[in-house]
Length: 263
Ligand SMILES: Nc1ncnc2c1ncn2[C@@H]1O[C@H](COP(=O)(O)OP(=O)(O)OP(=O)(O)O)[C@@H](O)[C@H]1O
Image (spheres, rainbow, N blue to C red):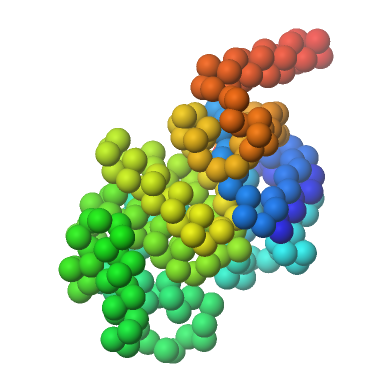
């Protein structure tokens, strides 16, 4: 359902600031796959998500969603396929709109403009019901401006909205990293629930190895713009954080050796 074939992306090519963010990267996701993505700083994880969402166009290679080639489409043209939750809780919701207006926007996504944000009693009841499952008391605050909510509450709302739109692919970019441990745990639980209820095909970047192991059915590790290690659902079960760290050290060491050979 998501097929990425040999994509590369270099920032500032041919200059002293040249950065090879993605190098001939291949990745295929089947319907319902939930893949966690780990790797060191600058490994290319966010660039991979940005390439899929269309924020950046790739220099070469192809990206297909449901068999449709999307890598030449702009971000807004791909938006109907893609839901995204960012690390910054302020990024996924409109602060000047109320909770119910934000939810109404999510519900209307992909439909013709001009419908306004007026809600039926049935839709409002659905919002209350869905918000109640978050156990944050938001079901009683439908007319409150989203800008008044805490970071954790906004991330929970962003996830709920992403689930509403039933995207073909859900992209989560360290979406629990800016939260305190308690709220991070809540948003993590919610992520599992929304992904499994919707059967959403998901790519989730995280620096938290324990989270990367516990969530999802596959794991990939990136380094210098490439996928250097992959684990299937079965393999993931026997992996531990120390084993992952060992794997990472091995790969990093091997790459350094390679480079040493080249010089
Ligand atoms: N907009 C940009 N302009 C220039 N260079 C960029 C840009 N975005 C990313 N890069 C560079 O591309 C490389 C990969 O960055 P990316 O943000 O994808 O890494 P990451 O794995 O998400 O890292 P982190 O864990 O630190 O968020 C880095 O060298 C980074 O400096």
